[in-house]
Image (cartoon, rainbow, N blue to C red; front, side):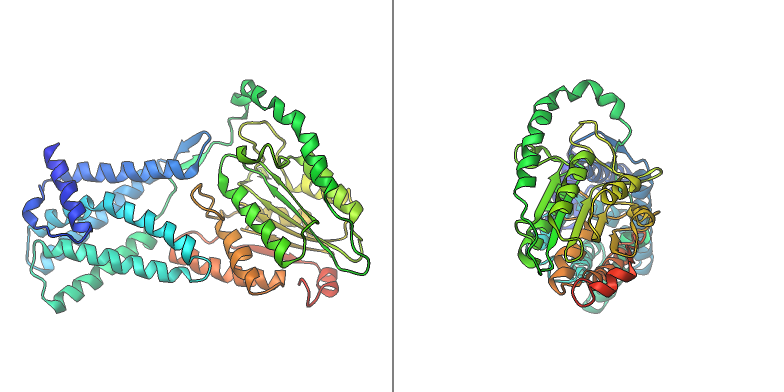
Length: 444
């Protein structure tokens, strides 16, 4: 245990650019194994906290991911030891690099939080990735220099090699989330829904208040009505995303007084109607009675987790058993209204499965992913999903065209996913001919 603490302290000094030498490290295979286990446990623990509340399942693939990372570290150490003719570098570099992991993780999460607040909406992500690569390679070069002298030219060469190795680790190796929500435990929650009884009695009043607050259309004005549906209540990211998008539409698209959101989240249960199929049907009928079918447009935004088999968007208010939103149910809710012109954006994994049911001549349908692909960014620590940030926060700041914004967002998402080594989500769009002709130059 003392040797492990020595290594962690030495790793901290190395990662914070404090003075340290090779003698401070206790180098052995056992120590490397313990440090690797600590690194793995920290990653799994942080992943659990990021997913938020609710029952989660462990993904065993992260064990293989961790072993692959250790193997790469040892391979780099072996290559450096041979190149620099310093056998002690093989175990020494591996122990020192792994000992820095807890400090590096703390740095990365703190720096990323600052980046999201200060610059993520305006600067491209490649700046973050490049900065991270250079910084990490500088730390690892320090680890190499503990066992082998590095003149300036050789230090640059070693840094370049380490940048390549880091790039392979970040984007060449498979990446998995350590935890994923359990969507199959509805039967286990039956006896726990009694706590929602007061919520159910309150819902009618909340929904009626929201519906009665909507304004009627203005004659000879092309009004845009916004309806939002944040379906998954266990993670705050969907609530935060919905609040951001509604504020954007109220200010930039003049929907104030003509916008309504339905949100599943414990924080909003006393102030905002919950997201249910019944509430969505009621809200769409109300909007359909207020707008002019020929002059006005509905913008419907749905954000949640998604499933591919069967295809649906998750509707879950912290354990309250609710009907899931399928493509057929969403289509039926829309068909039951006189609403003619529609923009429908579904942000969820596998959301492309909604396009066949929703596409028609009078609609623009946009989804965050292909029918057989995941979308990304729905971690509890995020304020927006990756698609939501790219489409609403970034692209719609540059244009009011919903189709042009889609093309901008699709390009940005593809570049980010490629840089992060993710399977491309491939957002989808279906533009009706009549919609394009009617709203050319305004919304198309």
